[in-house]
Length: 112
Image (cartoon, rainbow, N blue to C red; front, side):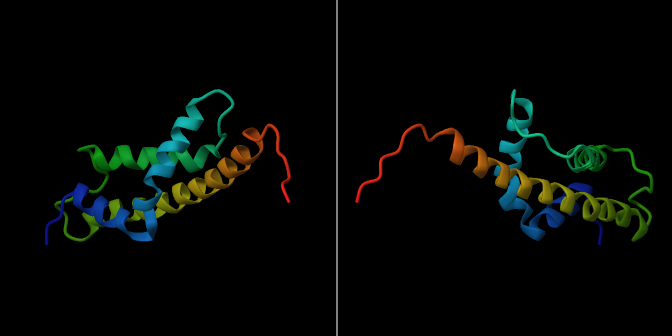
């Protein structure tokens, strides 16, 4: 059973609701890049980005041709990084709701 790194990453990302969080992560990155945007915890964004670079890179600490162990290091890194990124995405959603609810209401009238 030989799987490529990209196939393994796709399989891992299907779990834990990661695919549903991709639009949120894209909005989070845009907000981080904008002035006055979201300020994430450094480790929750940088470490998953480094893991992604590692998965895409042809270099590997433990070569994939070694049975079981070669794939295990990739899966372990994915299992380590995904919860960090998903939790940061959840914090971003809460931040986004808080900022949207207060920043766009200028005047309100109560109608009974």
